Amino acid sequence: MARYTGPRGRRDRRAGVMISSMQKNPLERKPYPPGEHGRGRQRQTEYGIRLMEKQKARWYYGVSEKQFRRAYEKASRAQGVTGENLLRLMELRMDNVVYRMGFATSRPQARQLVVHGHFLLNGRKHNIPSAVLKPGDVITVRDKSRRIEPIQNAVEQVVAVPAWLEADHDNFTGRVLHEPNRDEIDAPVEEQLIVEYYSR
Image 1 (cartoon, helix red, strand yellow):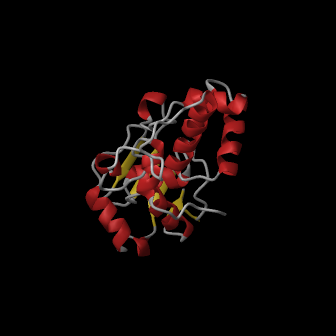
Image 2: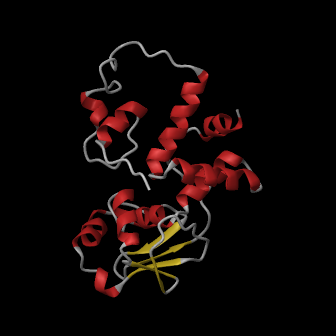
């Protein structure tokens, strides 16, 4: 599957907001889009604005276009507001939950740790980062993985865990308490524009 491997700061500048988990904000030094014409006047169309909002959400969660489109279709079939359903599905992905619980310092790192089998889901080894979790699911760091440097560093740096999650960093375990509400999701996107993009 194609993954973006270029400079994360360049993508942040294109989006106009911090969507990566970098320590330094590239927008402070260069608050304009990258490229030869970045400083020029940008003429935005309605389509362009909606497209960029969709891209921002994709980049923020680190998913491919195919994965994001599938999540949108699933969200549109579910009851409730489609945009909120979409963000909820993105937040409940295994890699995102691992990151939100504080067992990784970034989503790409969380994805790699999951793929390499460092976590148990409800007591069983689990290595699918795109799996959507449910309330009551328990994530545990495997015993032999608790001393590896990325997880140790992440646990030391963790500041806060969202209210919809519970994490015990001493025992390297966490639980999904409930599905997140929109006000508990801090994604810097306007989900209604994403719905309008796909509904065109």
